Amino acid sequence: MVTEPFRLSIIDYLNAAPLNHGFKHGLGWEHFHLKFHYPSACADRLRSGEVDAGIVSSIEYLRIPDLLIVPGLCIASPKRVRSVVILSKVPPEQIRSLALDTSSRTSVVLGQLILRERYGVSPEITDMGPDLPAMLEAHDAALMIGDSAMRAPRQGLFVLDLAEEWHAWTGLPFVFALWLVRKNAPQLPVPGGVASFFHRSYEIGQAQLPAIIEEARRTIGWTKIELHEYLTENISYTLGEAERESLALFFEKAVRHGFAPEEKPLRFL
Image 1 (tube, rainbow, N blue to C red):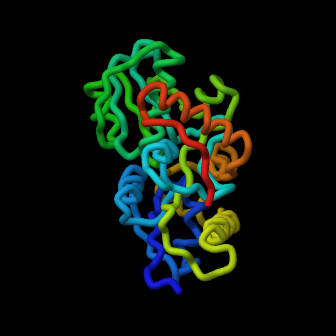
Image 2 (cartoon, one colour):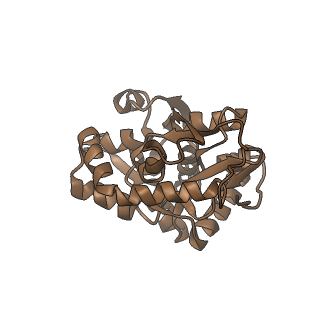
């Protein structure tokens, strides 16, 4: 019998909405205690043991010990993501200073890998909040993620879509985030354990996609057609063979460049 709630970190970004939707609308309410964080805070809470699971930047799988991956689910982009971008006043190979959105962990690693290996530059890095005018006032370029990136004006700027860059480089999709669960998380007394809830939440989200899109239209400002394309074509939620291959390659590069301590095999719930 569970004597403590299963503490779940929820990210209120649009790209995570289909994965979160069931939980936010009462799925497993008797088992789960929801906490709302931005991505980097979610990773910190998972590391400290304040939460038992969350949608976490994929790089954190290498940095936080004793985590398991929920099989079959992720936040990935097959080719072009549109919500993870470097916006630059100069061509990529001329970037000497880069402001990084402090909300993310994986994207800031990916952005630096792409600039180093594809464009031959290692710009000076500054962590900042996602305020594009402030970021560009003192830097050549800004890396932005999520809803802030979707709302950011891009006129007159060079735009590097990081998933598009990765795909052009490797031919693979890019995996931005995973459902990660602490090994010592509470066991739920239901058939299939906790893993079944993550998949059910996603199924509910897919069924409620029109409602998710309508809510996003009011907050982000994109058209319904653009938002539908974003959630069905730019973002993928399936952790398949190509995604696992991409994770292995990303992890290898991240370790080689010093962004994570060591590679480790993917271990699933």
